[in-house]
Image (cartoon, rainbow, N blue to C red):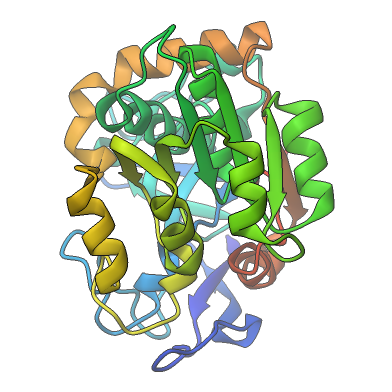
Length: 347
């Protein structure tokens, strides 16, 4: 059986910006004879996510991330269908997912690393299992709940950076559903600003590429900022933290503006921002969704209900074909996506 796969062709290098040429498409032969405990899966959808930039380096800078190896098949979030099985927990036709799904059109995987999915949870939109009703949605929901300290009727203002991305677009909607009086998103285009306000119900949106961010932030958040869901780090985060109220909370989710730089994670803050955090007693603790997986099942149920009822709207940018994995990844790293960046591999 001939399958296509994507391998790491080269590393971006120190402080390098990834390019599609860092990825290479190959064709290999797959022997479909399965050993005990193995299954053959057909890939439907693959995900590209900002954390993968760290995996392109020889040293990922994070103890929980394993570096991708040169000329080896890449992996990440994936959803597919079991085509044949020698594993008691997986049957032919099951829809399954894994965090370590190989970037291949078909793959032989151990059944023990696969999680069985119920397509009814997403009304058949299987790609949602990689976003709103998957690890991305969990990151948004558990991040808000564990680190955001939102309470209904408290007149809180939430600011989300990277607000039109996979996680930010869900986090802002959860903030609104959980009782924030005002939700303001920061993103990089007028099209994204429009989507946040008109489609997702954000109170306001700021285009960091065009607007005077400090002035616009003051205008959109007249009572200051209580909760900040931080996906980007860098200068934008310094600006938001500067305008936060005493006793505020930063949800430290991602730092995409820093991922192309060779710095430790989370990257160090400048002295002025560090001083603001201390002076105003603002909490800013690293948030790792994997530390809260005991709460995942209940959280996914809640996300599924919100998505099915339309209380949470899901935005996706879909690219077709495994040959476009590298292009989709590089586009996502530059903010080319609205919502979750998905690559459709097969029906």
